[in-house]
Image (cartoon, rainbow, N blue to C red):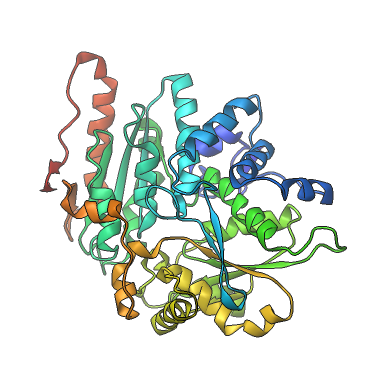
Amino acid sequence: MEYISTRGGTGAVDFEGALFSGYAPDGGLFMPSCIPLLDRATLQQWSRLSYPELVKEICYLFVKPELIPRSTLSDLIDRAFSKFRHKDVVHLSRLKGGLNVLELWHGVTYAFKDLSLSCTGQFLQYFLEKKQKHITVLVGTSGDTGSSAIESVRGQKNVDIFVLLPKGLCTQIQELQMTTVIEDNVHVFVGWHYFHGNSDEIDEPIKELFADVDFARRNNLMSLNSVNWSRIMVQIAHYFYAYFQCASTLDSTPLPVVEIVVPTGGGGNVTAGCIAQKMGLPIQLVAAVNSNDIIHRTVKDGDFSLSGCVKATLASAMDIQVSETLRSCSASDEDIVQAMQRCWEENHYLLCPHSAVAAHYHYSHLDSCASGTPRCCLAPASAAKFQDAVLRAGLVPEIPPEITALKAMETRSTVLQRGEDWAQVLRDHITAVEQWWGKRGAGLPPPGLQGVNGQA
């Protein structure tokens, strides 16, 4: 299996090359040169597998055993899922009215990104230990990516991670999950209103650094955002697991179709669904977005134009317009609140606002569900991370002790003020870390870039 750029301007790479590259040198994304097509017998066999076993089978298709032997790959995936709270890693809740909710949030940070990033962190460490190499991970986040990425590499000796988040546009819990990680290899930057204070603009200084090819190469820069193929690869398993949980039978001809509703921000997760379709999985995808509806407009009207600005919504991790990605829907904040309320009234089940975007689609299309096509709504995060949204819906948050404890923990971050050259600040800090790593044999302490119990 080789990987080629979506822009066609660079040579093919293997899985290791795609893993460490993020963006291709020509600015495109690395995707498989071919998509394996599964036959009915394989689907029937896979239908009996657990979620971790499905992840393994999918990874076997896309990672050559010469790069990672199968037994080693299996061990890495087991290690990645060892800290998940649910014994099945993911769980399907079957609610009233045909509402099936696939809970993808049983990882350390209570978000679906733990699934792919925990595996990706293991893959990175495998290659880095073999080659005694150091990398710098650079991540922009509108919510959950930053904390999941941090957890995937925290404490790893061969990785430093730099995370940039927009102040006030993540929830307090999301921010604390990043700023309370006190590790030498974790560097969190809080951006105060770069231009208009929205999460799309957080990506601008990061793109600038990746566009500086010499700097990126010299500092072994890579991304763990949704552009990274490894994340998409692991997320393919969501769709197979959802299908096997919801399909009534795999003995009919043709196989039954299952509709999967995907809360969509940047488009990485729904891209994994598109690949699952191409692998022969009979699913109908629905990209469910909030008021930042560029994907909905693209699917519905062919309109891929930006609106005036990114709107701050209850589903903050989806407050994105610039996306790489189908039937679609758009939900307003009022729609989100109503879906959360209805789900609680009918099931005593709390939805996060992102999951509620998918539930809004379900409640708006009960007729098609009643016609016999099963539907599965992906739940990307726990409602516990979005207490303000739960309260706005007139409901009572259910807060796990791990999240409650965050408010009493030490914090560490570096503030980036409006008017500063954020790209240059990041460049200077990354250079300092890389220089220290190169001299680590001299016994020097890590560079003191950030202050504990507050902001540097």
